[in-house]
Length: 194
Image (spheres, rainbow, N blue to C red):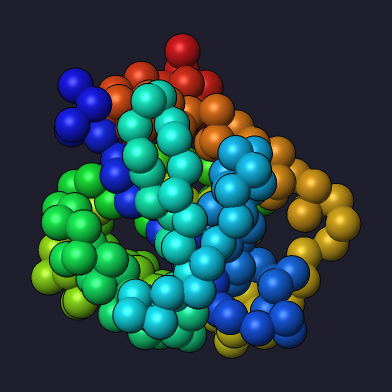
């Protein structure tokens, strides 16, 4: 049932060259990789407060979004695109960095809280809903709460970046199932259960 699947994939990150290679921008890395694989590019869309690309996955049009707001205002961009294209929250997938998962691990889930992530917090508030899907991209935790800000805004080691990108590749292979609404199959395969 393609109509039940993902229609909008949002990568969370901060705009600007100084943030490109940081852990907080792994959501951007993922949507950029999807666009590159399809030989598509992002275009600035001021009315959406972000950059948008369109790709075909499993025979369906899917929009990719990189908000050009800063992380704590991501929801403004997400809701602008969702309203314009009439995409309900349960057909949105938001990719973000996840402190509670180890480097090299990516997990799909629907709903839940924001766990202190400002991009998720603002997206929940703007959409007025939590039912959107998330791709949680593991970056590990620095070990002390006082170190988190500097850690997420820092660059991973070369080895960690390689492992993060491998987890993004694994997630990208699950896109056809996500777009077709086969969420359990996508989760089982990504999470190593099938």
